[in-house]
Image 1 (cartoon, rainbow, N blue to C red):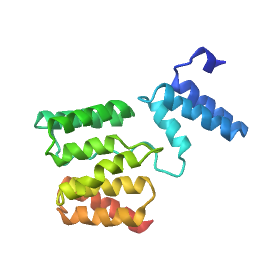
Image 2 (cartoon, rainbow, N blue to C red; image 1 turned 135 degrees about the vertical axis):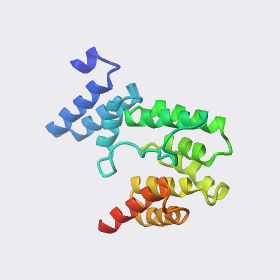
Image 3 (cartoon, rainbow, N blue to C red; image 1 turned 90 degrees about the vertical axis):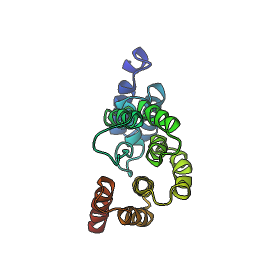
Length: 192
């Protein structure tokens, strides 16, 4: 009844899916969760619905990790806005900010990587990989490219390939912010 009264509520559809799953109706739950993503893709409820649709993957979307601690340029400010939208579970808004940064700085590997990460979709991860993969050739020594490629590979369960990319990221600079994150992920993966 609530779903009929609130046709544009991702939250109602997320909760409907949870209720249907608890009742044993897996197919109905999946339909409700897909509907949550469709009606309001730029919402925390849509992100949580995607998590329910992909229970074997890490929750949420892979975050973009900047190489800077404070933004100093217009492009870095756009990246920080995208990061804030990611943290608020607003993936469409994050993608838009990252795309704006990439348009403003076409030769900046960090902006280009952010735009690729912003495209990640659990149903279609190839969207992000098709943008990120070519950046390896375009920016062969950009630590951010290797790090984020490794991070996205973790999200799709390709752990050996992720370890290779993270190892290359550490080699590009173990003391940088991104290098330290890569080393942390490598350490965590060795315990798994």
